Amino acid sequence: MFRDEVQRGVKKDITGIHYETGMPVRIHVENGIIAKISELKGENLADPDLFLAPGLIDNQVNGYDGIDFGAQDIDNGKIKKAAEAIWRDGVTSFLPTLVTNAHEKLLKSFAILSAALKDSFLASSIPGFHLEGPYLSKESGFYGCHPVEYLRNPSIKEFREYTEAAEGKIIETTVAPELSGAMEFISICTENNIVVALGHTNASSEQIEWAVSFGARISTHLGNGCANMIHRHLNPLWPQLSNDRLTPSIIADGHHLLPDEIRVFYKVKGPENIILTSDVTYLIGMAPGYYEYMGSRILKTEEGLIKNPELNCLAGASMPLKKGVENMLEITGCRLGDAINMACKNVARVLNLNDRGTLETGKRADVILFKLTGNKLNIKETYLEGNLVYSDSLNNK
Image 1 (cartoon, rainbow, N blue to C red):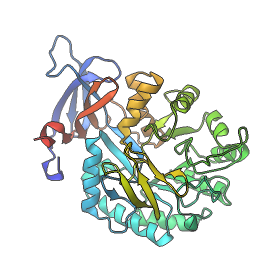
Image 2 (image 1 turned 180 degrees about the vertical axis):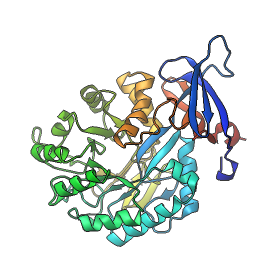
Image 3 (image 1 turned 90 degrees about the vertical axis):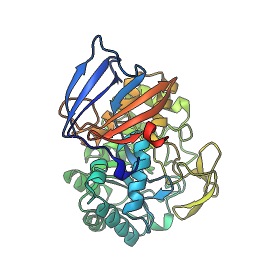
Image 4 (image 1 turned 180 degrees about the horizontal axis):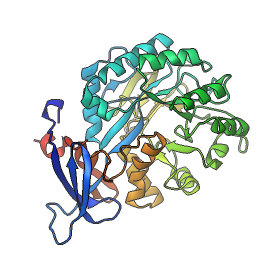
């Protein structure tokens, strides 16, 4: 459904099976907000197999459907096209993510992205931006595919230029805490309500503990952004797993983590302290083959894995966030409600997005309707603030 086909309405009812309770409910929407949720008793649903849940929230989206958010030729039209593809996959809120790059290019990208938010409808789906880099480890393996020539120590002055270009919309940043100046950087970001994540790091246990004490709250795609060979005891994974104040984001796309790793992370952290992320790149939906990304030649395989053959590392992902929900159901055996909450409720909590992420009165009416076949989510409709932004019945005509 394209932008000019969005159906708007002041009042609307959305019915389906509640994703947590398993009971049929009616959500009454007024002015984009959930005004009332009523349990339906003795009423026949139009489709008794249709589940209803909060819209998914993705904190790490590098691009979508052929559109790279860090490309220097991106414009409002391309950002809208990407958003429409993202809604199709059940995500109602997402953070366009910029990765390590030259200073001037990052400034330009943030300026373009922030200008796009003048469109109020886009702004309602994009609460802010995520900067992953350039303040990452310079150790081989730990920086992954980030261009090493642009990696550098945190600079408060430089970061302030980014926030000005982004018009204050950077709400998450990933940093390696072992870098010089990182603790001051983490502290200042926290004071300014910017969520700090630890990632692409070979920090010691003490450095990670200090980072948390200064305000770091997320572990960016834990288990990745790490060298292929690490010390079995002294590595950055154990202290992040053992710290209850850190919420790991994980890429459960079937490529980035083994099932055993996902099960361990789930058992250690629990369903309320994990967030699912996609780390998806512009290659989602594109054919297998060789492409350019982050200044390197990368390969997308038939299975959807993206790798840098020269560096022998992964280079982002090509699966939507709902794939992670499906794999959590399959791998951990968790409840449907827990799997979905890891991709909405938990994300909203750690990002301080208090107006969304759950089905409650007073929250935004960001809602998805889907059918569940085995553990597969088939998105049928997506609502953003009560507005229908995707319908498979309309798109498939």
